[in-house]
Structures are given as C-alpha cells and as structure tokens.
Length: 440
Ligand code: PMP
Image 1 (cartoon, helix red, strand yellow):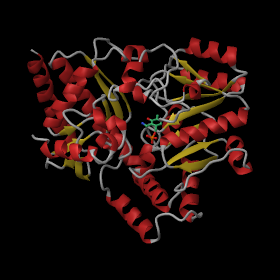
Image 2 (cartoon, protein in one colour; image 1 turned 180 degrees about the vertical axis):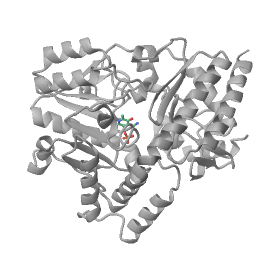
Image 3 (cartoon, protein in one colour; image 1 turned 90 degrees about the horizontal axis):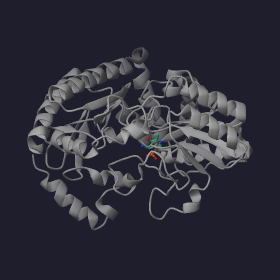
Image 4 (cartoon, protein in one colour; image 1 turned 135 degrees about the horizontal axis):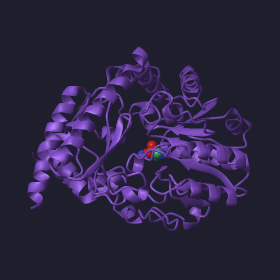
C-alpha cells in the first residue's frame, strides 16, 4: 500500500493551509495524514486509491456511514429551497420538537454548529442561572477547545497536550495562546471519585455554578461511571443549587435516541449533543429545563450564530434521527451486534497473540488499548496504556485496509455489517502478528 499522493498533497496543502490539516488532531495519523477522495457506506477511499473500512467515521458523526441515501435526499431537498435563511423555518420547529420528545431532560433546546459552541452556551446558561462563576470538570474529559474549558486534553494524538495528561495536577492551558486567566474558574477533579466530588461541592458550592461531565468518559478509555456516581452527582448538585451538565456530544444519538442520560435514567439540568445528531453535517444543541433555557428567551443570555438552525443542518439532523428511529431503533440493535462481534473478536485476538490489552465498550463506541492493567476504570489507569504501540497497530491496520483513530477510540455505524467486522478481525489478527514480529 502506498500513500504517495497523500504525502505529496500534504506538502502542497501546507503551503496554503496552516499545518496542512483543518483540525490539529488530524496531523497525528501515521504514517501520514491521509487525503480522502470519497466515502461510501462503511468504506472510505484515499487519493492513492486505497480503500478502508472506516471506524474513524469523521471522529464520530457519521453514524449512518458515508453518503447515506436518506441524508443525500434530505440535503438535496434543503439545498433546492435554499440552505440557510437567517430567518426561522419549519425545520427548526420540527427538529426542536423531536429533540424535546426524544431527550428525557429536554423541555427546550437551542441549536448551534459544533459541540464546542454547545458547551460554551451550556456554561453561560449555568452561570447566569446560578449567578455563580466556578465550573467543576474532570481530568480526561474533553468539552471542546474554547478558552473557557480547554485543559487536561486527554488525547495522545495531539502533540502539545499529550504532556498534560497527569491524572492530578494544576489547571494548565490546553494550548499556546490561551489566556491563562480563562481557566481561573475551573476546578479540575478526578472522575469516578465520589468522595472528591462530595467534598468539593460541599465546600465550594457557594461559588460553583456547574458540574460538567461526559456521562461515559469516551475521550479517555470509554470508561463507565461507577454504580451510583452520576446519581450522586445529580443529588448533590440539586441539593446545593448547582447546574448539572452532561456533555453528550459523543453519546447523544449514539447510545440511543435518549442519549446516555436516557440510557442511565439520569435527569441532568442541561445536556449538549452534537456529532451523531447531524450525521456529518455541522449541528449541535443544548437541551434542558425550561427554567434555565428561558434565560435565552428573556434575553438574559445571548445565544448567537449566523448559521444556527440552517435548513441544511436541520434537514440532516431530522433525516439522521429518522433513520436511527426506523423499525423501532433497528439501527441500534444492528450497531450493538456488530460492535459486540468486533469487541469479542479483538479480546480473543489479544489473548491469542499474548498482547495484554483491554476493550472498554458502551453501545456502538469502544476504546481498545494495550495495557498491563486488568481493568481500566479511572483516568489514572487509562494513562498507563501503551499509546505508542497502539498507534503502530493503527498504522498496520491502515495497511490492512482498516481506518482507525490513532488514539484507540472506535466508532461503528448503522451501515457496518458482519462482513466488514469479519474482515476487520482478520486484518487485526495479521496486524497484531506483525506488531510482535516487528517489535523483535
Ligand atoms: N464534547 C465532547 C464530549 C466531545 O467529544 C467533543 C468532540 N470530540 C466536543 C465536546 C467538541 O465538539 P466539536 O468538535 O464539535 O466542537
């Protein structure tokens, strides 16, 4: 397999596009950041003519795979009527109503373009609602790259921030150029640590506006909350007048139509959704209690965005949800079945090759890592994984025709089948064999 044209394109791109990639993470792919030519269903093709089974899925949004006919149809119809108006339209009402029906905590929603923006709005609403400033967030979680919250970025596939992955430690800016004072109001805690949460909230509740958490720590090892942890977070925040925000940018519409909070039966004040919601078109939402969301209606909180609620975005979201909801959610049953096939097979292959590792899975998303630990239930344990070995594995999988994110997180779409899963496992078998052979 050669990547000649991708390598040449990167050099050309760098002359005009800063860094040659449009989002910093993408620079980490080995042996080179790939240039894509087209995608179809679960497959993606690069400019050198190589075809891959795709588990990167655009970093999560492509829950229907590439170029799904329903999405194409919805986008084509939207484009014919004009992609954006800067005015209100029926698609916004339909999408907002649908979100209020599907997301258990949603009485009102607000639409934005990205997960980062949705989190910015949720934090603003929480601060305005409580008239307090501080925000508790957790090591290993990711909530977008805005100055207000970008710290402790967990990903090994980003050079600068990978040095900031200590499970404990100070709140340091996640990037050069970030105002250090922007994080003055952030309290960084270990996740899945009920005692630390209780102590901090009880001691500082007069200053704490919000607790923001991924419901499952998808950005660092796909780690589940301990039994009772989210419930504790809910009861403490309710008791102490703190807004509970669940960041469901990954889990929303991926774990199910009701997101992780529906899955776990938790009632947060606000959730943020993005990624899978639009099936690959930029859209995100904040959803939550009418009392808090009313701050937008009264004008107490500003919520802006030129392209918010564009016809293209609302049509894509509605088409995606329609596909996911069809036949009583058959898409989820299928995604879970394929994911199960993959995770069971990968665990067996790790054993077969004597490669100690773990696969943490929740619904159609999982994290595969090479690690000596028997269980990975905290960010501290996750930080012990062999990220370099995994990146090599991902590069070998690429040669075998499987596209993986170099940090270990796999997404499965509603369009992956048993056949792709079987091919993937055969590829993984060969890649693990080569990983060992080439290490000697
Ligand atoms: N929150 C979470 C949990 C995420 O995983 C991400 C993106 N990976 C974001 C927020 C930011 O979303 P976006 O990249 O759309 O700004």
